[in-house]
Image 1 (cartoon, rainbow, N blue to C red):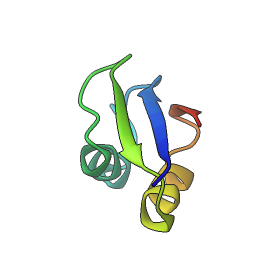
Image 2 (cartoon, helix red, strand yellow):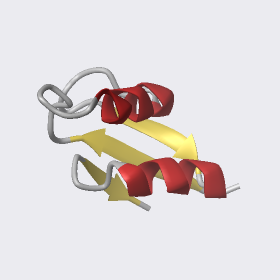
Image 3 (tube, rainbow, N blue to C red):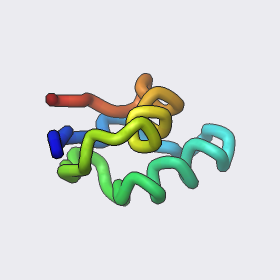
Length: 58
């Protein structure tokens, strides 16, 4: 299955708690941290919710 790299670019501090929970679900904890995830519809949906805070590399 294909993979996607997601990097946290903006902090969830000062934003609704929902965004922090989505980032935690993606496995992102620190700024500039990059995780490699499987490219599934569920993961893409989570990325879409926080796309203003992350950078995505296919």
